[in-house]
Image (cartoon, rainbow, N blue to C red; front, side):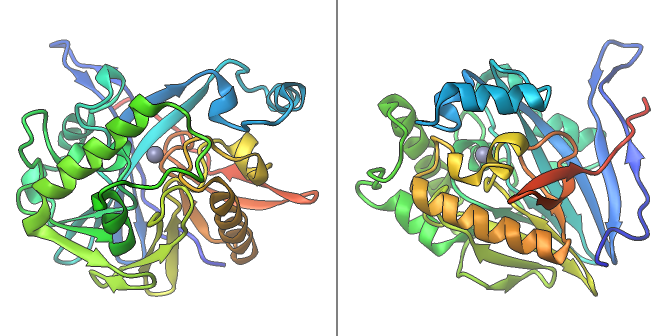
Length: 316
Ligand SMILES: [Zn+2]
């Protein structure tokens, strides 16, 4: 079975030092010869549950599932889990958090990297799963200056071309909020333009940096990629924004997510990829599921369910 053998974990939780400085946690483990670290950029409280999730599905059905799973019926709390991969000669980060775009609940990345002993200048490469603001927004600060000056940036060619086109097509999305769409386009373009000298455009299935394979899983955005991290026989699949809630869209992938650019294509990609990950028993890393975002999927009746990898969080 593929998995995270040779795990050595270092946990730390939110704490307060004697000087009152906030210290938030990180999670560290090995994948073959790679050292993986998870830090948080914060969280996004998404409410109400509908229509953000399951737009058009009868409220009673959705409420029953939430109730059965002891989940909040008023909101879904999205983590923002950032994965770092240290190889022999690289320090790779996957996605960059929200930056200054969404207020004080997010944008903690730099502080939390420091808590994990990592400086922004040490990051050699940043792989961007897709160009939504909670993934690309941390590449620049509020003055538009690049935050990771020594990093090469990798982004799907399809994703780049979509956001840089004169008029990105949202006609297959269920998202109605025009102001939000405008913000999303602005943040994508601002960041892509700022990092252009360091930008590498990647094609579906391409392997990069000797330990990463990008796989197109379109729908959430046209160039949305999942990211396979591998070392020898061990692998982990970073599913980016294929799912935003375990009990809603893993158990009911067809219920969907309003923020998907192509709603139906996102459902199809979600089903295909999650079924494959269940069949192969692959370890999954999720950007938005609860900290530290690590788990598996397995069969449950006709569908699938998320099995979170338990983690203890002692104070440092
Ligand atoms: Zn996201």
